[in-house]
Length: 253
Image (cartoon, rainbow, N blue to C red; front, side, top):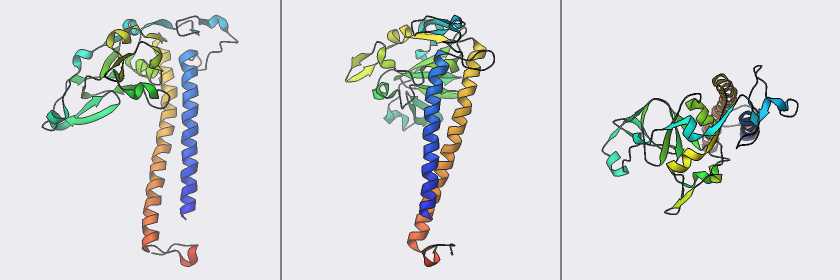
């Protein structure tokens, strides 16, 4: 019985790993080739006239190339550093974010709306291939002083900022060493090059990735369910609460 569940767990883990590999490869293609009006990846070999040179290599001709300063608005004035000791006296419902996730919940908020966070310092810069470099957050919340707060401007959506930087290697850009940690200050952040597709293509790319993310999340929920099933079975079988006659066959309570 446990072997059967283990097999199901192993198969589900393999599916999730494969889907993540597919997503990583597809993301690279989407960020360099984009999607044409038919929703297909552009072909740089078959149609080189559809591409142009940029600081980040060949990109579709209909895309714009520039920097974070041109396409993004940095709203670091919204950051609110609050020590853990002070937060203990402010327990509430509003998330208090660091660069990689929620640190706490407090009773007030300073930020409202949709923004992207890019870490200012920390060792997460070294984990770009396995850990997201950005967070996309919407609602009412707070952000500490270790994350840059960005939103889109002009032709660049906030969602595109998240997509563009999510798995990007930020180590290749100016990082400063401070107190033993890598640091991406605001001046350096603003110089990082970006490429931006037209708004409708940004949405199309996001939709393709969202479909894969939904599949990965669904399989992840199935994996959690199988893990809970195995844990429950082990408890029941190893305590004798549920018995298997003859070691195989049907289960009897």
